Image 1: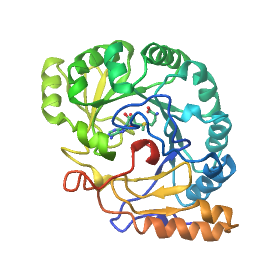
Image 2: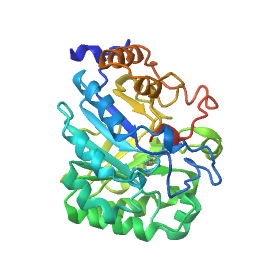
Image 3: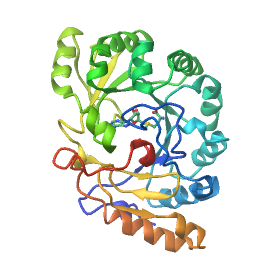
Length: 326
Ligand code: SAM
């Protein structure tokens, strides 16, 4: 099977899959899963570990190299390290990473590392307990910080901290810079995307002026981070600290998009901000052969949209982030 198969109509080589292993979460970040949200997938529709492994194995035979587990909160999926161990062992998968809210990371970090997870991204929008309750709907900060500390002691490096910037927490940025600098964490500031009505209502904060201010106040220089994805980075001249800016709104990065997303119920989304998708679960459960599945994957890559239209058509994306997999 040739790698060229995973090249989309715009010449982009798809080599990265975001794998949502659950759409459930123990937090209720207003911009992601609004309080009272009821539209979760039924367990009977969740892809089994066998089904997930089969899809990733076929993808990897066509050139997929990197998989990130996400959700919802991936650590809520029972026996998650059984899955990560199986995925880490697949030929062609060079990088297996995980995004987590870290509320349960203290318990899971050593087993995750032993199972083949190489890199961790942790979401954290504030270091102020009251502000965190307002943003995440739960009093979880102490558990998150404990999880981060255990992950650091377990030897995960670098650990990236993802902070979605809104009016609510724009004042928390400098404190996050200090916190991450002290611990050697990479900080990534993210512009809020209009996924679902609540995120749209909250609105995004343009990171460009914030980037200029941090550069000056913390004497940072332009840097490049290996495997840094779409983020643009500033860092200290000694390389000890880096801060990335993920700017889907003020400066989108679709021209280099190399990823697709698989939901817990087996829907392959080809763009975060567009509806183009294929449903793999019916194929998997109707006894499709490997050749049938490979053809379906190839057909889907051939339909990958050029770009999202978050700015031109902000009301277009009705899926919440927990459903698609962040
Ligand atoms: N539960 C895990 C976590 O907290 O990292 C993984 C899933 S979460 C959906 C992944 C990331 O998506 C988080 O950093 C979250 O802040 C971000 N996110 C969710 N909704 C978003 C939105 N509308 N715009 C930008 N980022 C969003």
